[in-house]
Image (cartoon, rainbow, N blue to C red):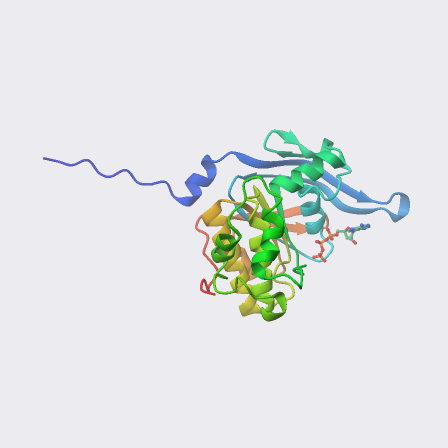
Amino acid sequence: MATSPEPTPPSRSDTQTLRPPIYRVEGLTKTYGDGPNAVHALRGVDFTVQEGAMLVLLGASGSGKSTLLNILGGLDHATAGHAWFYDRDITGWDDDALTEYRRHSVGFIFQFYNLVASLTARENVSLITEISDNPMNPADALALVGLESRLDHFPAQLSGGEQQRVAIARAIAKRPKVLLCDEPTGALDSATGTRVLAALDTVNRDLGTTTFVITHNMVIADMADEVLLFGDGQISGKRHNASRTPPLELRW
Ligand SMILES: Nc1ncnc2c1ncn2[C@@H]1O[C@H](COP(=O)(O)OP(=O)(O)OP(=O)(O)O)[C@@H](O)[C@H]1O
């Protein structure tokens, strides 16, 4: 008896396109100051991001990458244009609404880790989980970034890359919808930075957290579903990776 062929499972890129947009950005503009001293940080940016995507933002210093992330993360207000988070336009929100949005939906990773020196890795993560609605177990969040054997170490007993991975565990433990990373490897050497990127890759794949990574490192672009190239406050190019590759070194 002839057997019918097994249906082909959808590829990662297929499942990406089936997901709803988490952000839709139209004409987003940010001007600091006015008159002859005005700085045009964003000059009308348009793009859409599918839920669960990994995006890398590349571009020269001053091209507007951080400004975009700050607006998407509710840390700053746009001058004009729109940014919808699902069906809600965050550009119209007041500070209270933005604070709620940041608290529940957004995790931030910066170049410097801002850990509390007198608390262990587990306690640093617990600071966030204690005030979250549906948090991960701090030990589980730390295990996801490869730190299951460092739970009770203090920041001074951890390497720079390990400290950044504690910061990642802290950011994801409240289960945010989006993780915004502004030069997360900027203070690290390249091998250590790769391990931090591997942690972000794991978080994105395992938890489905939509992730933006600002970087100056072109190599990182291969780990993204989509690369946005910035130039002078605008998106000067986009590159879609049909088959994204994990960072070279996936072991901590
Ligand atoms: N608070 C501010 N007041 C005035 N100008 C600002 C402010 N923040 C940023 N800018 C200016 O806006 C422009 C875009 O800055 P932004 O930090 O977004 O660039 P970037 O691409 O992230 O740069 P980098 O890679 O160096 O971090 C720059 O010209 C910067 O000097």
